[in-house]
Length: 235
Image (cartoon, rainbow, N blue to C red):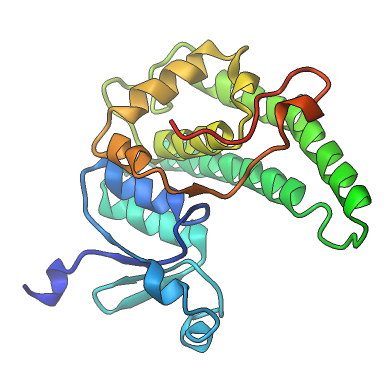
């Protein structure tokens, strides 16, 4: 096998987190990759060998690529999912950044109590943070996604063609599902349909079937006043 034909190698833990989106970019086009969790599990030993001392990092041919957004766009390019038209490419980029914002609000909720030493106070703080995500922040973000999708089957607006934006939205909704916040989608049937449609693309369903550990898990149902779902469930 020539060096050019080596599959991309992700160094990251077996978590559906920052490496999930670029992996799904490849999956959407049936491209293969290696998931090197072994190296990640020796952390921090390899830290000094990484461009910015953090993970994920992608190794491909002679390239060493850091920063999850950069990795995602690189994989989207490998998968042929980035439009050549400038206006379409800008639309993709904006939607990918919007999805990144959703990841950020999940991350803030997850670590909202990281500096609180009292267990009860920490639990209460995190509960309130996730409640705000569920009741306010996530619905606001979903509103915009639904508006951009409109009546189209894909965010490209050109069925049966999907692009990197569709994969980014699917990845985000999969995080929502794993976190146990799927009922937030009840008011967005078009986004649910998009999610189900994207599951059938490439080998995305195989990624789901691997049932890797979720990174975001909202508090159990009984801790929400309006009946949020329980802890993350694999779909």
